[in-house]
Image 1 (cartoon, rainbow, N blue to C red):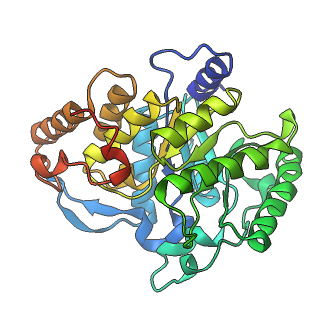
Image 2: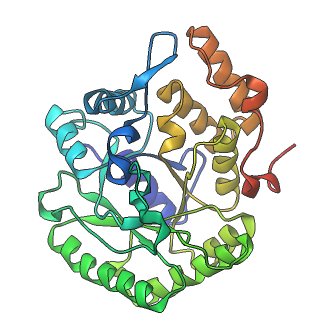
Length: 332
């Protein structure tokens, strides 16, 4: 097996040799663990028009196309889908790193139709047998809600997970969500609270136990820059959150990289795109500071037009920034 591009990039980043082109892009295709059937996304016809919801087979075909095009550095999926992709042979000889979601806490179940799981504090849960998963890298997620009872359970579950992962020969990266229930914090306070929770969670870990990198919500420049500066040995990545406009996606990549993040791990923002591999090619150009976020939107729409695909939004609407956290740091 060749060394994956992820392994090469993460080694340079750890050594302090981050350079243009080393920003890591990950496609988070693990949404079936959060909401089941509808999370596979929209089926589209030859013109890009939505015709229904993808089946699992169609969803896997989309993933295979992205891996075949070498469009990302990490492909994250559920344990069952990683197994199916492994069996298909798509990763044989590929430079793309496969990864699986190792746990599925209750706050990620919120897309289940009729589900009310996000209305209560996150409870740890793990359905995957680590020893059977067909990838060497996995994601573990935690959510802190400023409640000693539930947060202690969350931390204890992570303590139990780590030796299990080592015994199974798995490396992991750690996702820390913002609180999933009201805390009374302002947006700025939320970022600082999560930063402190991360720092104290990692303080009790030896170097061998630490995650490969972190995946966190973008809570604005101040919070991200603080987290990056606090401990340069901890590599920071940002999660994508909601769908938003394509300008939102490109702005998030650009602002995160500018603030010191070295990875972007996006799910819905990629999965809902009209043409995913084309969309990812523009994400790469933004991450490498080759184009501005607004020019990436224009370029992507031009590519759709050349391919005869209809965009979901007009270019004027798609150039809008709709996520408040991105407004202050946007280039005008």
